[in-house]
Image (cartoon, rainbow, N blue to C red; front, top):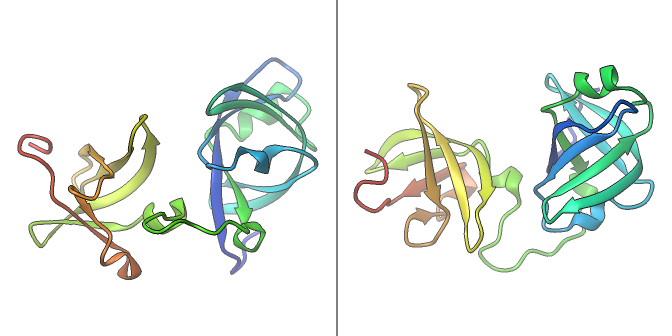
Length: 173
């Protein structure tokens, strides 16, 4: 189901667990309670958002959990959606962000400029402890990791879908 709705990514199906359709999930939301209860989520399958109801969820670690979705009852069905993103509708996100905080959807996909030249785009945000890290890909396919800190990343042009980076020497060579 494709529509003009706006979605926020809250996790990624990173694998399967067992043979009964249990999905291993990498949690990327700062609000993991979004996985509890009979919650409606959307799985992005080859560019199409398909609605599923979470029928069970258990935390395995801080950013990892095991999830059951209605209609996914075996390893074959679970494997078919392995690697897919898990989303909620933007209107279901009632979170008020702190100053200088952003939804992942506002950052992922942004063009990245370095020395006023297009450097690449943001492919992911990785939690690494004290600060998040931006995963960047150049047009040539080269990948870089840049700490998402104010001294290295400017979000002043985020409203244009642009980030500017100021990496320390040696970080992108």
